[in-house]
Length: 112
Image (cartoon, rainbow, N blue to C red):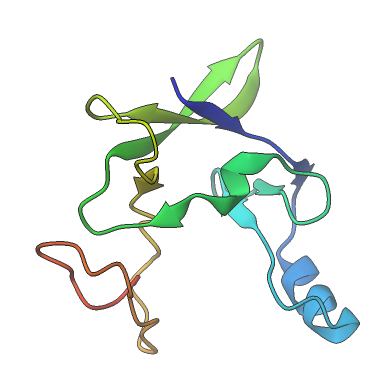
């Protein structure tokens, strides 16, 4: 285990639109399941700053602890000092593509 992705547990995605209206340029919303999102935008930890990679050294896993779903980042391999921690965001496939800038070997070219 590297770190838990923490934030406010919410049940709606309208918050992303509200953040845009408020001028908040970056939001950190991580979907747990169909109904639940963890919003780390205003009350998260360092996990919200972990970048995407198409060839990551970590992965995100949803676990249940005392009937609460949590997101935990686990390492795939030993991680060296000063090595960037990354995981695959696994965004859903959509018509509008989000360019990927990870520059990893085998980069897919988009986050979705």
